[in-house]
Length: 334
Ligand code: 13P
Image 1: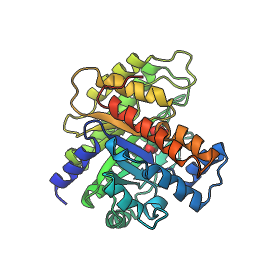
Image 2: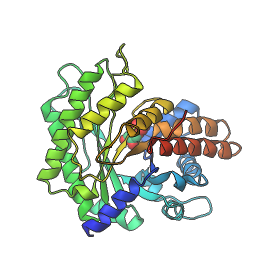
Image 3: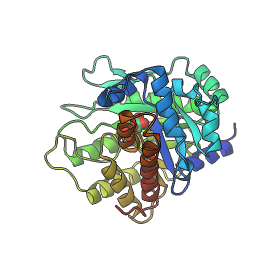
Image 4: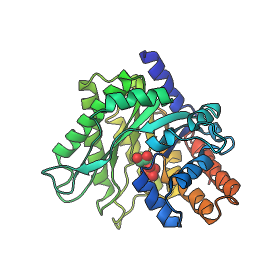
């Protein structure tokens, strides 16, 4: 696979006015979401839910790619058409979550390191054959007392770099995701500092591992105050600080940056992205790769009446996709 092909895929992922929908919840995570709305977490319900999302009419107008979980990549729509074909026909690139989750980091109570490198080369080969064009690996950085440690940041960034190298070897664009969690009572300045240190460690590790940045996408968390901090930063402050932090740590060669929503409300996630895209020149396109902020409202509707509310749920997903697509251009109006 040439760098040109990787670069082409990466650029398509952040095409103007388009972003990613993250529907890659592991079985344990989607069970939590289903439990919250009273849906039984069976394989068929998971399949039907993902079918509802992926067959939303005209979704490809605002969505360039969708991140799937292993199970979903192998599933088909009710009529028998594989989801990967449904997606390609709609102009949506198939992506795959390949990490095996964040596990306790030995020797560092309360901190996590993401696992999943063993056997990854073979899994990526198979995912490529199944149609995956990009992959995602999420590292989790927790802010707390004496946390994060430099060891935790560097161990996670080292794993992200090794994952990215294996992806590029397999012709798959790596989406590297170092998520600084919103949990805690830290202020926005602390989030800025930790995000900056993390991104600098990440791009150092990517450099050391010969990663072609032209064929890589960053999935970043925004610079926000912790959820329980009494002093929450406003929309403009979050946008300004996030942009400043990214400019100080992310090389301009990168084809694009997408954000996770991380527990922000649907509207906040859209408003923050919109504000950043209204703030003058930037070296890279800024777009979205939202999970909860794309799905929550639709899931609630669908849960009330799976068959009867399919259209209403799809209209809701489409509305979120459109709003975020407009925010990716700085053209969203509430
Ligand atoms: P949220 O937007 O719900 O944070 O999910 C995005 C994601 O893929 C996290 O890994």
